[in-house]
Image (cartoon, rainbow, N blue to C red; front, side, top):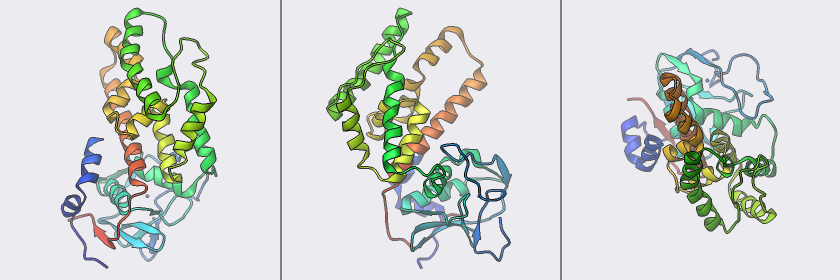
Length: 298
C-alpha cells in the first residue's frame, strides 16, 4: 500500500482533473463499512436517487483505496456503501478522487444535495430502475423529440433572431460532426427527426459504457437537450455556454421583464453545478490508474 498523500500533492499529480473540476453517506465504529443513507435500503421509483438533505459530519479523514472491484472511498477507517448497502466502488482512480473530494469538502454538516458525483455513482452502482445499456441509450436519444434548441418561436422578432443566432450554429455543428440531419421547427410537434439520425446517434452512444451513459442522461435532463449535451461532452461548448443556451428564452424574458435576483442566481448556479458534475462524471468514468491509497486530508 502506498503511503498517504496530502490533498495538495494529489491535485498536483492530477492537474487535468483539477482543471476540469475547477472549470466546470453510520454504523458502529467496529463495522468496516459505512452507509450514510438513513433507514433500510430502498429502491425509489425515480430515475435517479434523491439524496437526503443534510446530516452532521461524523468523519475526520477521507481517503481512497484500490480493491478487487475498483477504487473505494474510506471515511476514516470505514468503507462507504450505497443506499442498497453495496460497497461503493468506482472504476477509476480519477473518479474516486473527485468523489472523495466531495466528501472532504463537507464542513460540519454534510449537504448531500451538493454531492452530484456521489449520487451519480450510487445510481450507477445500484441501478434502481434496473435499466440495461440499450434502455439508457434509447432514453437519451428520445430527448431529440423535445430538444430545447430545435423548438423555435414565431415572435417576437428579437427572440426569433436570438434563437437563430445562438442555436443554429450548434445544430449545424452536430449535423456536420455526426453526419446527420436535424433541423428546427416552430410547430408544437417539433422537427421530424430522420430515422438515420437516430441510428447514428444510437451507434455513437453505444461506444460509451453504462456509467458514462448514466452521466450523459443526467446532463441531457439538466439541459433538456441532447444536442447541447453532445456539444458539451465533445468540448464544443463550455458548461457556462451550454447552460445559458438551454435557458435562452428564459434569460431573454428576464432581461426584458426583470427577475427575483436571488432566486435566479441560485437556480443558475445550481444548474451549472449539476451540469458540470455530470460532464466531469462522463469524462472520468473510463479513466484508470494503479495507485493503491490516497489520503485526502492534510
